[in-house]
Length: 328
Image 1 (cartoon, helix red, strand yellow):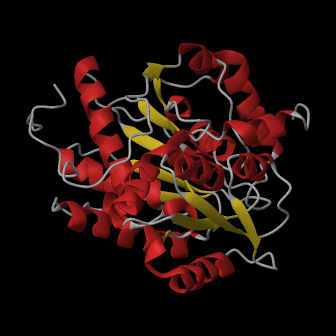
Image 2: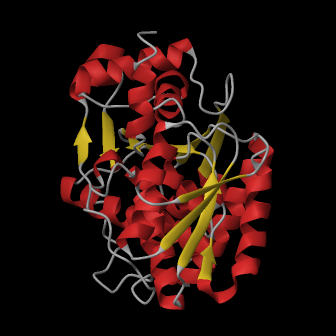
């Protein structure tokens, strides 16, 4: 059994404020038709596209703790931001609305996108950065929170803070319990990496529950040296916040899948996304899903000691936009 080391005790995040959003646990399923279509070995899919809050996907996980902290603080405004393809912006707007908070989003680039349209429909105020440089967003968020004082709760783009990473640490415990029930141990867990919070939380959570499995992070927006440092810091900070063992950075491999640029998949990545749609009905967006899944197909040697577990993080609205471009 994979879970012999995990005891039925209160999780380390039990004492943290948490605003309920997710419908969890999300399914952990085998993908036999996709295996046959692409000649894959045993492949498991963690369906965080089905987390059940709006179309927020895995962004729901950090927001439960970030919105919980904002409510506990007595904030009136949730301040964050991102770019036109940001799944987090739309999710943050909906989550803030559900908690009775206003939402202010500082955005770079062209605001005409499905995600930002949904954010606006959910009542968020969009504040352009006046440029196309992503790094300006976090500075603008910090300045705005200082201006608003205690009435505002701010988080950087993607919600990537040690507290936000706790959401995925809880997700790691969730998947560990599912693997126990299936009596399966994966040889590898693979997922996309944007601002780093999800993979950092996963690393901290795996260490917390004692599940020693290699992780493949597929970077879609930042060069490897930059994202490596950020993920290691976030993972260590998340573990320190929870009082759990620090994760081993050596268990994480990062690969660069930025290709033509953030939010733009290659033709091969679109082809793999189409196969996922046809074989299993999975919708993959060009910002995260297509790149990460394609890396699993092209880069991963089949582990001899267990199936590959691919974490489908969501991104349903951008996936529809990808479909409008036509087949690869």
